[in-house]
Amino acid sequence: MSISQIVAQHVPYLRRYARALTGSQQSGDAYVAATLEALVEDPSVLDTGASTRVGLYRLFTTIWNSVGVNTEPGLSAGNQPVERHLSQIAPLPRQAFLLIALEGLSEDEAAKVLDIDVPQLRELVDQSGRELAAEIATDVLIIEDETFIALDLEALVEGLGHKVLGVARTHSEAVALARVKQPGVILADIQLADGSSGLDAVNEMLRTFEVPVIFITAYPERFLTGERPEPAFLIAKPFQPATVSAVLSQALFFARNAKRKERKAS
Image (cartoon, rainbow, N blue to C red; front, side, top):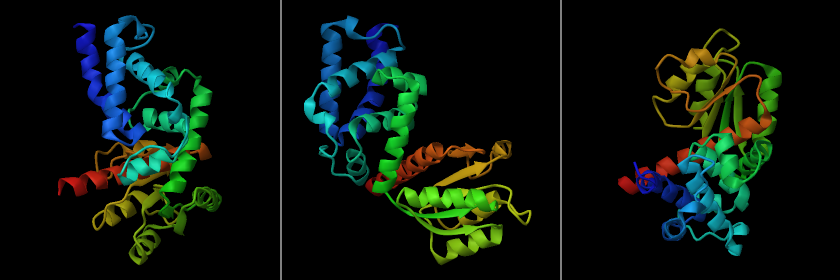
């Protein structure tokens, strides 16, 4: 397969990334076009020391960052809610977040794209998590039976700008709290104080409404059942606050994006 054919396979994903980064399909496509034009003019600009995809994203990043206006936050021209939220994040953390959360690159790959090291990348993702969470604040239900962990999660969630609806220690408490007011996101442990299951509580709630769920548990193997909800967002105990911040922001980002697509399709 030729280089042009390999590059062509990655272009749709680069367009997706460019649109999310710039907040505009027109602007994003223009940067992708400039990237491809640079590649056609001089194929050697594609970094041969990395995978084709990483090299392509790295070239795009070089071109995007060469435009001065892109180094300032809040200047994207997007009209959709998700893009508006993302445009408020400082440019480098926004790039780090999207490369990991949207494009699914590994930390090593994303660091190569941005020409930084992995510790710097993690700091940027953490920063983006805090900034994005503040932009899309929501109501959070915490299902956790360990008092100190629950307090840590509550402080972390509120520190990000969210509101904690309540902390449930059992299945029945969790369902009762969700009936009072539907949460925008759920942080759930699996094994609860009375021997009940946080997984069962979440399953019961998801029969009546859709909401992103993040499982924070010392028993990740219990998710290998193939039953709903799938562990799209799973954090193992003991956890780092930065991890919770980043994953919470990713969950809300994808939930908002999915709802926008549903409205557009209907």
